[in-house]
Image 1 (cartoon, rainbow, N blue to C red):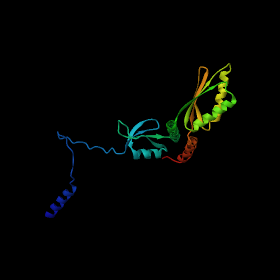
Image 2 (image 1 turned 60 degrees about the vertical axis):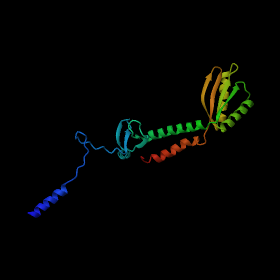
Image 3 (image 1 turned 90 degrees about the horizontal axis):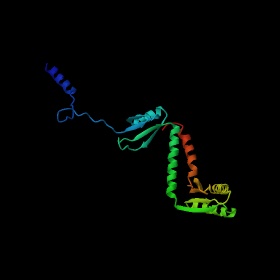
Image 4 (image 1 turned 180 degrees about the vertical axis):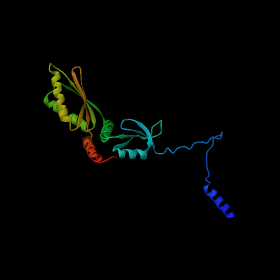
Length: 217
């Protein structure tokens, strides 16, 4: 009998589990806080929004052969990072736009200053080419060049366009034409210096695309 009681007491001791709960002032149990580590806001390809964890989002992107891209480190309101599921074409389009913005920002920050050149539509061929050489030198020194072709005469518009074509053709290795516009009798535009890596941007993207198309991230 004593042996049976001892065994019963041992069983009860083994079955006993301490329960630790937090109580409020009025005796109600405080619910345990969930572990919110690695919780993210996920935007789907249809722009639907859900809350999940990073591991599940990664598995989902692999199953659906999509790219999982972080678009914001921490949302100010939710305190969660924001990720988006993208197709390969959407990903490369976003990447191209992002690189273009970075390139324009670097280009803008690298410009040393602005120079203004005014040209008459009656300028001679020799003087025009001398002016073009000056533009190229300024572009190579990272200056933005503003050009005004002042129209003069009955065929001013046609002549200004011809001068513009000559300039555009001869400076394309050092600069690009932007903001072409007509104002009164004058034709105005700007020349921005090219960066050395600008010509490689599309090639880099095409190369990365070939690699990325082999599978999702």
